[in-house]
Amino acid sequence: MEYVVTAVILLVVLIVGAVGLVVPKMRRRDLPPPPTVPTVPPVDQEIPPLVEKPAPPVVVEEPVVEAPVVEAPVIEKPEPSAGRLVRLRARLARSQTALGRGLLSVLSRDHLEEEDWEEIEESLITADVGIEATQVIVERLRERVRVLGSRTVAEVREQLVEELVAALEPEMDRSLKTAPHDGRPAVVLVVGVNGAGKTTTCGKIGRVLIGDGGTVLFGAADTFRAAAADQIQTWGERVGAETVRGPEGGDPASVAFDAVKRGIDSGVDTVLIDTAGRLQNKVGLMDELGKVKRVVEKHGAVDETLLVLDATTGQNGLEQARVFTEVVDVTGVVLTKLDGTAKGGIVIAVQRKLGIPVKLVGLGEGPDDLAPFEPKAFVEALIGSDA
Ligand SMILES: Nc1nc2c(ncn2[C@@H]2O[C@H](COP(=O)(O)OP(=O)(O)OP(=O)(O)O)[C@@H](O)[C@H]2O)c(=O)[nH]1
Ligand SMILES: [Mg+2]
Image (cartoon, rainbow, N blue to C red; front, side):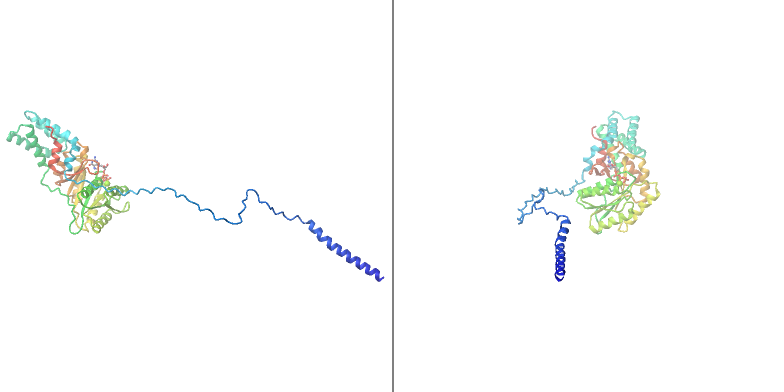
């Protein structure tokens, strides 16, 4: 019996042992095979070198960048103003053709009859000399011819020149008050109706002053359009002059005030203030102009108030001019666009009507087409000499 029990126990132990060995093996067999680790890398994959070699020095070729040519702003040196009217006399060709040739052909007749004198009168009136001035000139010339018995064309021509010069009141002071004084710059205010040539004239005067050795500063007191300030600033940049400007639509009086202040601080010789064009019958705008002048004068009196008149507007311009003289105390007239008109005689009419000297004449759109007005040279150019 004992043997039987022992045998059974042994048998059980054996069976349990056998099962213990077989089952884990079976379990292992059920498991999916372990993933195979590739030993050969895919073709496109680079095999990293085991020892990193230092990379050969890369020679980076510097791109050839051409140094930008920084052009220094070209500051122009305008020519001095002396003798300009004589140099520009050909610009009066249209006036000369209308007035000079007509007059000289009449004067060359043997006997000057009543209708010849009427023809002379007509020529002068057509050239915009004005009726009043024409009558005075012709009367005096007739008298001289009668008394002196002048007969050669050259003689009568000379007398006509003298009478025209006399009508231009050569004794008037035409000097521009642009020199600094009392430790501050001279102040020039430029006024007139729309499109008369104010900004251009301002720029041209600046060039004249710089050409004559002075220094200037521009005040862009035309704040209506930003383009107006740009326009005067461009003139300034060409000659290396500073421009003081304000915001578009800002108060022109305050820009003018600031410009003079800046001019005093920087020690320039002359401050030139460009103003907006305005019609003489717009009361608000004329009041504004008066204010510009008053505000500027907190720094001291304005030295020149120049009225710019377009010569091609003829006698109509005279009424405009009169209103301006009432609002601001105009000290001088600049007659522009004399190159584009046959009516150069307007100079005489302007002075007679306003009693203010024509100080400068504009004879073209070029930067240096502005000349100091000289009565004798002007009349000589107007009449011409091909007698
Ligand atoms: N032929 C000729 N053209 C001139 C002369 N002066 C000015 N101009 C021209 O006239 C035009 C008007 O000139 P501006 O200087 O802009 O006139 P402005 O009075 O400032 O005009 P606003 O500011 O708009 O009132 C421009 O085309 C100038 O070149 C001149 O003497 N001769
Ligand atoms: Mg202007």
